[in-house]
Amino acid sequence: MRQALVLGFVAAFAAGPWPQAAAQTEDPVAAEFDKFREVLEQDNPAELWEVKGEQLWKTPRGPKNASLEKCDLGLGPGVVKGAYAQMPRYFADVDRVMDAEARIVHCMITLQGFTYAELAKAPFSSETRTPDPVSITTYVAAQSAGVKLAPSQNHPKEKAAYAAGKEIFFYRAGAFDFSCASCHGVDGQRIRTQPLPNFTKPEQAIRSVQGWPGYRMTGGVMHTLQWRLNDCYRQQRFPEPGYASDTLSALLTYITVNASGQVYKGPGIKR
Amino acid sequence: MADPMKIRATLQGDVADVRVLMAHPMETGQRKQAGKAVPLHFIQSITAQLNGKTVFSADISQAISRNPVFAFKVKGAKAGDKIVITWKDNNGETRTDETTVRAGL
Image 1: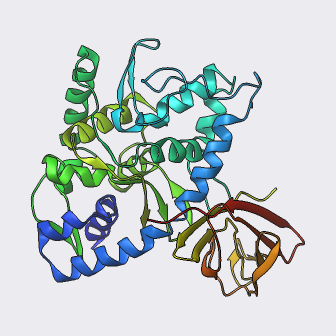
Image 2: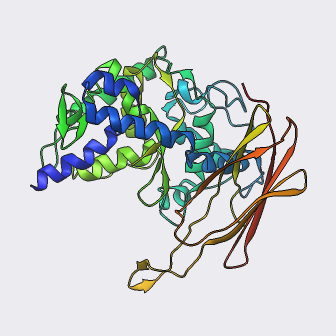
Image 3: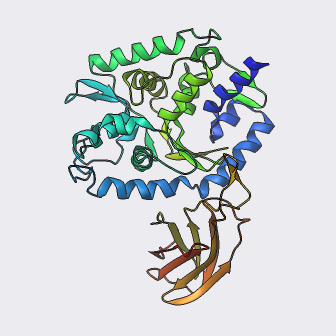
């Protein structure tokens, strides 16, 4: 029973508003849910965080009183359009592969003078508070709506991140002897009414990226993939990974590269 | 200060389809946190103006959801017209945002 409950939480990762989900399962119930999500997407409160994130991006803030408009998301300083769809990627200045939120955190530290400790202290949204990196990530993600996912795999470190991410994805451990692949590495798995996408397959891997950052109707909070992966770890009874850590960047590299070539729709909405 | 609203006004013929998202906790006063009731905090009134003339106003209650969305249609609008929307909550807090009507498809 407990195990079933855990599976349920892991399945939440799969929740996504994409029509191909219906095509893939051809389940009338799933198709109805997809219609429901489509209606909700028209007025997605995620846009509120988009607006807020844009302000945070453009306003001089922090000890150095600087804006983030010089932040290099991989396409040159200040270029936001399409940047999210090409991350995680290798950044020469730090000699690391970073996902979008990790890069934003990096920029807030280097450009604005915030410290990692204060940003990582309570990095996830609650009903009363949305951390700034979450809003900024939502803004950045929205600027890639309609863009094809194209995370680079040219640099050796990017290939290494993919390999590491794959290793992490299949690594079984913890009190339940779980891995990400236990739920998301097999076709046609389901928990109650929730179909589980198989992230090792390109056409299903998109569902791990699509809809994030997402507005969660339960509680009305905005969450990013950093939060989602952290929650997967927690539900698997793993030690929690560090916020904006290389571990999560690697895992995101693995999943995003698998979904490469498909169109990202921008911030989504979750039940 | 309250967070900004997101307003979209798209023209369909001479009718503007206005959709507005508001960032507000909309506390009902019924919810408890750590045993203590979370105080009532909700938007009480909304007004929308088209070029300075009030075209829509509403008094709403705490029954409306968190981060609410409102949609309404305004007849006789033209592309470039200014839509100004204001809300006021029971704590006297208020927020005003504006947008221009865009031509539809």
